Length: 216
Length: 229
Picture 1 (cartoon, rainbow over the protein chains, first blue to last red):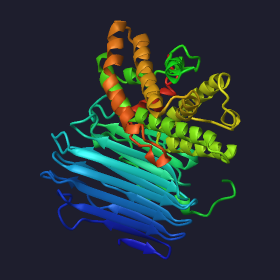
Picture 2: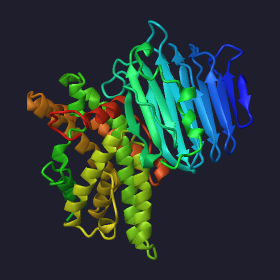
Picture 3: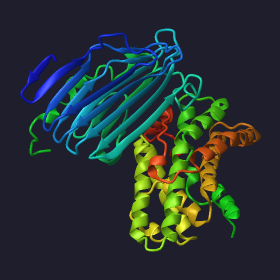
Picture 4: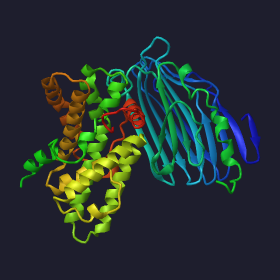
């Protein structure tokens, strides 16, 4: 923990051993209580290494109670050659909770094509799904085909969920079903070119927790 | 009238459903640099992702319609509510709001045409919007098509929409397009076998194609477009 106040805290996530190797399963479960604010950030990126025939998995589950706010600034998740990773991201929000989550995937380390990645995202508000996405990015399958990813190797995504106000960027912006939030995504070849790279996730929704003004 | 005859009728590009305004994303794909010779690969991507989601939703909608109509004591509003669940299931699996909007427009005109031919009460009078997959699933079921025929109809229509739009945008030998559509049969039948047993909304996959979504989103605001989506 790097900072705290009566109703909020800031926590950095740091791996203490080499991640992610074949056979590894990482599970992160985060619950933010009613009215609390949590700022999570990765201290470093994660590399999914060659699994030597073994698959690995990375599961993140975020649960937000009524009035809770969460920011999660993920560092890049790099899928190295020979890796076979399944990532799941489950976000459950109470109807008035808000979350800003950055998720960056890089396929391949420098000079690599990258391994196999299945990325499954489910966002629910009040128990009802507002976004379900199942990306199957297999370099031996359709990953590089037109419509899938083509030549792109970076998927940079920021989701502003609930009342969190999205930051305008040059990335493609999608309105989630039923006004549940906004998702911005940039597909490209170099992370440094991503317009979402400069979004300060930890700071973006600071306004969310301010007392609602009568004008809004 | 037999189901196989009606299956041909529903698959006919001359069916006045407004589908001629659609390119199944091939216009934005070509605008973003896809080559015409990549159309077969583009078809494979669609059939493995967004079209599979649509076909599964149509199959589930058809199942809801058939069982709701047949089952005694099942109130009309229940059928509509169940269809609304299927509609929502497709919607949350479609990231691009532009593509959701395009589907709603198609659903509306498809429903208007079909409701003049078949008795689709109470669905036809229920408040929309309804995505195309749900409308198509209901209409196909009412016409007597089974799950397999319904899934094949959705997939076939997508293939022909892509090929026909590509021909208009970047003219090439039309027989090449026919060959592509014929070759797509393998991927179409594979899709059919994957979705034919879908019964509930949880059976609907959520496969996404990131560039299809991105191109679809950009196309909504692009100028001088020939097709709506």
